[in-house]
Image (cartoon, rainbow, N blue to C red; front, side, top):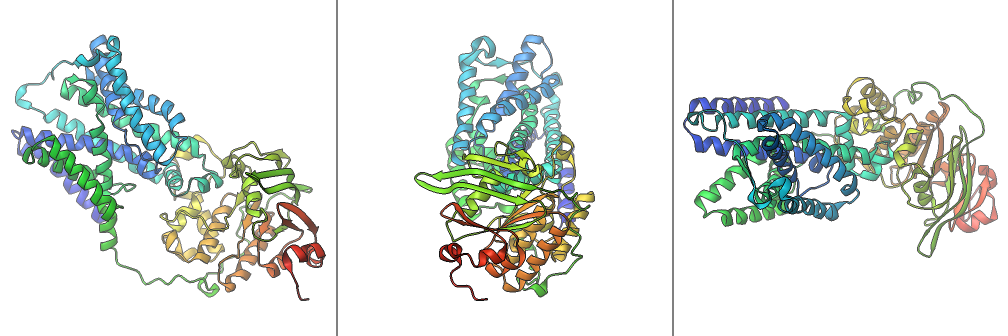
Length: 588
């Protein structure tokens, strides 16, 4: 759907919501249904930040509504302060708890994380029951009644929740447009790859979890004043969390507008089931049936499905043929040539890695000279990709030492290694397929600072730089295409541009010519040479031996996890041990 059309529809709907209480001032029941829909939308939009953008699904996210409500309830009764004045503090308390809890629970993934979030909701329910001195236990907390006249009804709450919904949506939309938001989507798509391109995934997840709690906590304070009575079972209700999740799934998890649209659909359907279907049991049945239907038939939600139906298919043919590529200036790789140095850039010292009884890497010593294009070859299963994983920090525990540019890095996180100028591509291309090509190339973080979080994702000099790199690899005209729609060879080129965006001192290339059209092999070699002339060092794993012998010097040969030979291509070409282990008969 066109962005202008979406904004026009949203504007009309917003004006209608503002006008509704003035048009029907006596419709108290309808006002209540609407404000509860706004409350679901606030929670669903917030939930979408951690579970839609970052992909960490929480089934206990309404815990922050209860935390916000109880914060306002406890403090207002003890300090004799109006509950609404405590709403910002309730949001801050929710954020603080989310950050503390998130630093622990976000270490888990998948079903484990889902179960932990449910347990957290139930834990707070138990705590409020068993801390009567603080929470008044099962007897609950009674707050003062609203100060405005009864003839006004719930209209003030209506506008409070409407305003909070709009602000929450604006906050979510702002996050999605920033580097922070792009990083969260990268984590959802491929967390390991996100770390490899410099995104501090642990920090991003913790911040997203905390950010998703603030407006729910604020809404909790307003909700407490709306109810005027709090009890543990109502404040920490699992059904509320299910409603929030269902709303986002119905509308479209990970989209901006999906949680809003889904919130209204689910809220109205739930109210109809309660009124006309026999109460809570009918609502539970409705939720169960809706979840099954969505999972089976609409896993992406309504808005993505409508988007696909309304978007016309463009006649773009994606091919691996080199003739389909643009040929930009081959020197447009780095902003400035990297200052030349001498000596080794990468050193591996007695590196070992075993999987059970299998020694994948067995005492490897390897040195990559500054400014070289070094090859690492060997038969399948010889440990080449495992060695790459150990160098970049994604291979788990190992023994031995990894030194880069004079610094020992084997104790650093993957993103810290990327920030020091170490980039890599993968044997099987790992782009963020739902992002556009341009978003993929601007996603890497050359370094990290707090201001990076709020900077525009696709804007300014970084976007210009990304477009230069796309032109350099011949894919400038594809910047707006979804990365997953490109051919495999084109994805390889986009991934190389993505790594070059890091301004790396060294790039590890894992089979750059693997699986691509032979016509692109020369183009890939040309790109590597051009980058190398600007000072980028390469370590290349490749099975295309003619390409390796023509492009690389020196060459290391790995077999059974050990380096069995190293030297210039001509020497390696004729080494009997290499011929036996890998190359076989090579004609001259």
